[in-house]
Every structure is written in C-alpha cells, then in structure tokens.
Image (tube, rainbow, N blue to C red):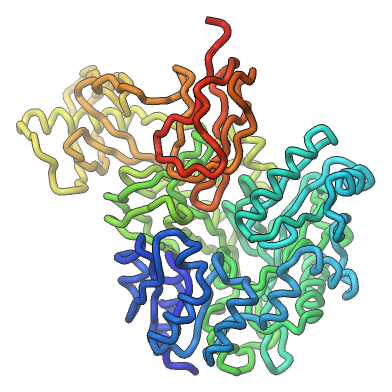
Length: 626
C-alpha cells in the first residue's frame, strides 16, 4: 500500500476519499483553486497544494498543474474522484508517466469506454444488447436527420464523448431536429471538447438501471448488484437507490451478467459502472434492458451500494491500485436491506433549479443518516463549480423504512441564506407513485408543478414566529441573538397577529397551544425552518424593492454569473411567453432565460461569449398588448 495519495478533485468526494485514506493510514493531499483556498476539503487534508485560478479549465482540469502538484507534494498515488478529469485517459497516462500510481482503470479502458459510439461497437461485438441507434463518422445534419427518421421518433441526440447527463437532447419530430442538434453539439464541445454525436431511439417509460462492477489485475471481476437512478431532472440524477424496485432474481442475474461481459470486453480493472436503459412499461424484463454506457470511475451514488453490501468501495480502489486482489469473491457479496441517496443542492426548484450562490451562514444537517458533505457552515457556494452541498444516504431493512428515513432527513435540513432543494426531495420521496415503485425518467417532469411549488409556513410555524417576534419586541432586542435557539411558548387564550413572511402579509392565530420550533435571528427578521424550507418572518412590512428584475417589467436578467453560449433571438423578434431568449452556462449547466410574456424583444445586449454578472440585464420584452 502506498503512503500518500493526492485527490485531484474537490468537495464531498475529496472528503469522502480522505476518510477512507485516514482509516488506512494513508497521508492525504488536497488540491485547490483560488476559489477553494479555505474550502472544507482543504481543511480536511493533511496537506494542500494550490493549482491555479478559480476557473476549472485553469485548475481542476489542468493536467500539467495536477501532476506537478502530486510531484511537489511527494504523493505516491493520485485518485481522480469523479467529474473533472476522472475519465480522462490522457490524465491517467500523465500520472503514470510521472512514476505515480493511478487509482482507476487503465488509460486504454477509459479510452475504449469513454466514447459512446466506440463503446456501443465494442458491446455489440461482445454480445451485449445495446439501445437501437446510429453511430458513424458522417456527422452532417442531413445524414443524422435521415438516420433519426429511420429509427423513428422520438430520438435522443447524445454527445459521443463524456457523460453526467450533459450533451443530450430529446427530439420528437423533424421540425425541432436542427435546433436540438446545434444545442447538443454546443454543450458537448463546451463540456468535453468534442462535438460529435450519436443517435438512440428514445425508450418510452424508461428506467435507468446501473450495475457496480469491480476488477483487479489478477483476473478477478465481480459485480456488487444494481442501483436504480431513474429519478432525474434535465438528465441529472436526483435520488438513487439500491437495489432497484421491482427487480426479480431472473432479471438481476441477466443484467449483472451483461455488466460483467461489458467490463470483461475491455479487461477492466478498478471500480466502474455499467449503465442500462430499461423499457419498464410492463415492469423490468431481461429482454427490454439495453446497454447505454460505462462510467470508468467511482459514481456519485456509490454510497447506496456500500450501504447494502457492507463494502468500502474506495478501500477496494486503493487495494486494487496497490496490486492486491479483490477482497471478496462473487459468492461472498450479498445484498442486505435497502438504501437511498438524495443529492442536496443549493438551488431554487421553483425558478428552474437555478443555483443559489453565496455564503452558507447557517447549515444544520440531520442526524441518523449518512452524510457526505462538501461544505460546512460559513463556507462559500460559488459560481465556478456545481452546487452540491451534501449527499444524504439512508439505510433500512426495507425500502419503505429507508424511504421514510430519507424523507424525514431531507425535511430536517436547515440552510440560510442559501436556498436548497431539500423540500423538493422530501416531496419526491413522499409521492405515492414513488413509494409504489411506479417510476420512470419523466417522473419529476410530469409532477414539476407540484414538486417544485414553494410551500408556505404552517399555522403552527406562523404562530411560533409571531410569539418569538413578540418576545423579542418585549425585550427590546435590536441586535442579532447568538445563532440558533429553540423555544416553547404558552400563548394567550386567543389572539390574532399580523406579520410578514418572506415579504408577504400573513395572519397568525395564537390559540393557547404550546409551540416548539427552532429559530435563527438574522438581525433583519427571524428565520424558522420547516419541512426543508427556511421562512423569514418580520413584524413590519419590507421596504419596496427597486429594480427587482423579476420579469413583471419585461426585464430578462442573468440569475447568476456565467457565460453566454447562445442567443436564439434578435432585436425586434416576436416571442411567446416561455421562449428562450438567451442561454448562459454556469455551474456545469446551461440555463435558458425565457420571455416572461408574449411580446417583442428589445434592448438585447447579450452576445455569445459574453461573461455576465448576476442581475445583469440582458434583454427586455415589450408587451404588444399595452
């Protein structure tokens, strides 16, 4: 076993790898950009090395700087984590060329499986069923359109390189094909430096099933059963679980055998995930599950597999990279219970999941579940990387028990002033169809209005806020109190109090019952938490906001800092409510800014390539009705 490891990543995955490394007595080395000099993963490590400016392209994606950092630190091995360069064969080769141990599959396997088109061809040769589709060297629009018509609508246009749900567009007919192809190519080029695409038939009522595989350099190869990653938004996973709901022993044996065949086809060594798409209209069937791709790295959702198998997958990565055989044989690996993971992100579901950035002044995560967190209270969630705060993982003997535990954990999340998707996650987990296992990848989209709708405070919470504001006023409190406090109050027999919640008027009825709640005194009101949501209460109405840019005046503003990647309209264009006017890329995602109502575009100031600030006006829509 090596003495030290450099983790070429950041956030929660770096901290999670450090945790296993410390247990094994391995010294840990962090890398950090200028934006992360005091980040939680830097504080966790034994040592840290600065690798460049905040922009990922000049830091976490810079192969020379990462290799130089490893050599400077004296690390003997490099773990890439996931994302960034974790599936980059050139990075793996550079690490090995520097005389360091690469904790991952061979560069050849990364290259073979990293391109979806060549991976499909390998799987066909290995006898693994693949999704009906088209791949080839002729990337002309006319060729692709003809192939799409031959496949039959709807089809998926997918980036040939990369993964993580980026560079994918669904097209339902020929009319929308050109625009979808352009958008897919643009996103693929920005994310992976490669704008080649392939086509796949779009499977109706699809389930996303993946199998964890692990190989060693001695010919050992095992699977650790399946995960279900069906709940997604914009092709990004939201909630994952193991095992998959509705999976029979027969279908499990077939899909795990296919995963092993896929890994064996490239002599796979290390941790990997073979991903399948299933037509689940009639439940999971072995003849309706097809290979999609293979991720040649550790997955974000690996904790659910660890929970149901009792295996530390990072420890296995270390041991296999050090030349040891797999710790367990296939017949020694068994499923035990059920586990679910929810990705807690700083984002605003009711505003299209735009990231919520800034300083996380207050953070309280629930107890009783596993927490893999990338930040702590006082840390900054900036615009340069993804907005993941933590992963919440619950285990129980049954799916019902694990789901209930995770829903309760999500409802118990407290953050301020940044908003999160905690309440959204809890609603997903409480949905009757989810509880019954009736899910497909359109599950969230079909319920978006309900799942993403902001909830108001309960009467009990309003009563608690009114009592607390009254108590502070009676004390003459003018300065913020010391952080979070709990209180229980016995109110007068019957009183009606007017107050404001997040700027909106509210009436609280004090009915004499005991009220118990947690509160945060910000000095500009009291924040109370309920069901994963923070509510700010004040005794007085807020000052009128000036220039809010909320769309009522037709202004279209940047919701966060980013780069303009598309402007599909021109000055004077007639648009309908919801039409995309400007597309900006920020925090690893594209965000389409839409027309707030029907009208004509004017004051268009955005151009492709522009770097824009949060709140910057990019266009205005003038209503023709006025």
